[in-house]
Length: 231
Image (cartoon, rainbow, N blue to C red):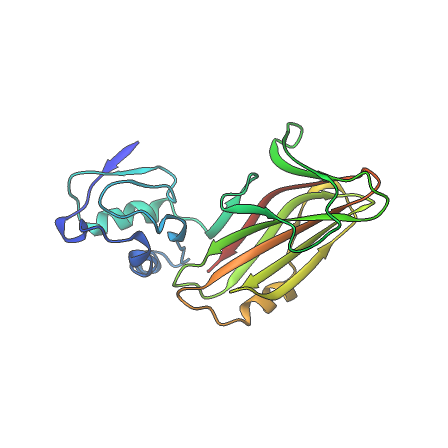
């Protein structure tokens, strides 16, 4: 692990999200192909010690070094900003969302063929039974647009997957996924991204991604890695 430190100027418990804009500006200055670094997932940490895991190499904050050197280190390993999570989703919770047709089994498992963790939902009932997985995502203050999203899943006959994006509790996008017989990534279409990008994003905005899984006749729905990227 490479060690790097901070000047006394920024060593006063400054939340990482507060320097997100400065990081972004620095990165745009040093390359003709702007990259961005998402620090939102680390907003609960501060610069008075800890780890920055958004970089390719974790950075241990000790002693003192100019902020510019810290930004350069981040820039050297920067990629597309966003999140990518695998089951069990960080920050995810199970919920019925008021549904009563919830007779089924939800397992978390490992698909060694695909080398991925999965949620596995199935029901032996003759009609659709459902359950939800809700994931809340804190958006960075400098977001300008969503650039892509996909979810790895297997949605065979007698199953269905619904994705909903909720902004501050209000549904802004719904997408139904069916007929995915083999485990594969399903992406949002350009029209879906346009719908998301038509919204007004505030500094304090939280977006909730709600996955509703359906099964009947003992069919298994597999839900795996989810990615959401932005610029």
